[in-house]
Length: 102
View (tube, rainbow, N blue to C red):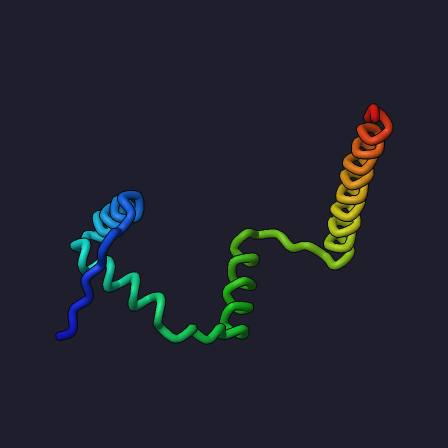
């Protein structure tokens, strides 16, 4: 079996790998192999229909529903808060700019 030797591994990275190996109850070598396998594994395909079904089940367990009108109200409220925050930030910038002495 081929082998890889790593040199000059930063101490912080070594500590992080050892901690991760301990959490997964693996040796350092096994953990490094697991990390490498995960890094080069082909991307998993996202099953949209299954994801949507899971989200519907989760919402059903919560025991309440939200109407489209309520969703629209939440969106509007969020947008208004963002706009107010932008005005506040830009107002402060203008105020600072006007106070600068050249």
